[in-house]
Image (cartoon, rainbow, N blue to C red; front, side, top):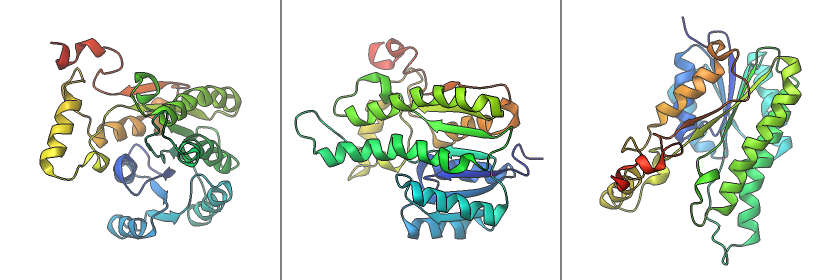
Length: 255
């Protein structure tokens, strides 16, 4: 018996990276999963690979009308919605002194406004026991250079989650946040394998466990928050970063 038997989940950005890994895990645990993304080709490929329990919808998380339409398709196909994993986001660099307004604004539009309106689009269909999972980042607090917009957006997720907890607790709907650290996905790939290995190694030296995370390690935490096993977990931020946030001086670079 799966941990998500009978449940229907929406995973935004479910066609790549951590979102795709979570999609596969949720399916394996008995859920039907709707995924959204902006790349129709990738969406079609994922749907073909994963089968009839996946509904792939081209949608823009930053466009409220697009997300309302996506949720409508989910209800038509599956007749319910139990889990919203607002995972879609971008991490464009925004260095102080050379950043275009449009780039900065786009990060906030997708990572903050888009998350709010994704939840709002789903809200009418969520019942008592439903789970909303937001995606934070250790970048919100680590002061990484050139990441002002991304850091601000993920700090905003933490603040917004607290308000959602206050508003949705009376309805028995849970809101929790997964906070990934450096996780080994395709976005870390450089021009050559050697350059990629060098980057991954440098990241590992800043993490007490001396390695980057695997996407399934993030997805497993999302699965816990999506399932009834976390029925009394409300307003939590679960950091999944190998200790980088809690004990930075324990990293290999300081040993």
